[in-house]
Length: 127
Length: 127
Length: 127
Length: 127
Image 1 (cartoon, rainbow over the protein chains, first blue to last red):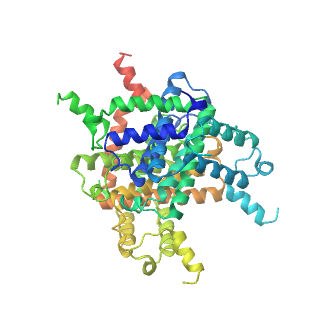
Image 2: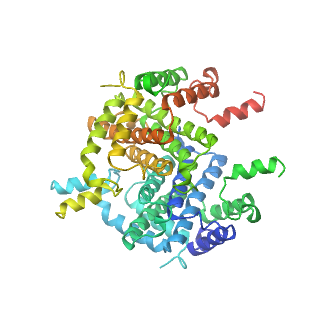
Image 3: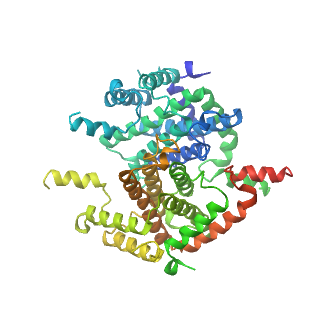
């Protein structure tokens, strides 16, 4: 089993079973799940809190393994929220990516990380 | 295209292309991406901030569509971080779920949402 | 010592001393401190993650004490960031509150928690 | 008015009045306020998301002003949560700082930013 042959539905089904077997649907409301995702995101950040941007690129195998677990938790709760909301996550992601492609045209943003509002302002001022 | 026939690798490849076409690898360090995920998680939470848990289960189609976009952003950055770290995300998720299954045995936690530390303390005190 | 007779400067000075005595100025960059605040905010949220809004109003003394510590950490890092940025925090807060008073006029928002953008749209549509 | 002569109680009172005049006590539950703090913390982070640690030390006056507003929002919600919980924030902060002073003894941690668990492990292994 790996990314090349695992569909999102397979992971969503696993998570659905996990939650139902524990009668945890009552806790997995959209509001609570949004908090869970944010909490796990903070646990991921904790690993990088005091590192420079460069240091964060040179992780030991142990760190990488712990970081992988935090990242997994984020996606696990995201899958659960998709289940609860009845969302097709792949379609939602592909649509959002298409929107981002329009929002950040290659030729305009290459090598720059300014925020979208910056580009918008540039446009309005006619440049 | 939908969850039933989209693999994680297909989504990872799309994101990889998006980043490379914009020369954004320089910004997509693990440290920065962990911040991005947390920022998007907060934008998702913003939709639920003033709702009760119950209200968060009754979303209008418009709200659902905006919420889907925020959730997509979280997973998009998670895919990018998997790319950067060279992680097989499915395998990491399946491993973490197996760990959670051991950590929260069905018969013990059914219908309860106490934190793991609570169950641990119970065990240590012999109950 | 208590809120009635403790100034923000006194707390800022304590934090400044704590950081300097440990040679931690090098880690307390604005970027890192913004992550620290977000991480502590998530630790605070963790206490409320599975509670209903109502349950979060009925905390035991033990929970209250743990929650107080998380809240303290958030403000401690905020004081440190004020120090690093050379900000007068009281003035910044008073200015921001004045802005919020204009943004959310009493008569318009009483008892409602809609987001600001909602009120703005109402205005633009002439209602 | 400035940090040298503003007490925490003065700021707490201002915030208390702001909330009561809008009948917003019903929304300012501990659970919701913990989300608000986390959301504002993410808005603060957004300013530093793509900067290096070094760049985050060289902010323009405009950036500094926007960052100040985000930091103010974090502390404003923290004051509101103190009000709701009936907490003396100064005392809680001073107590937490005393705990941190014991947890991170100067001679042991000077110039290092390892996490607390690291120091604990060192102790247990007898070093």
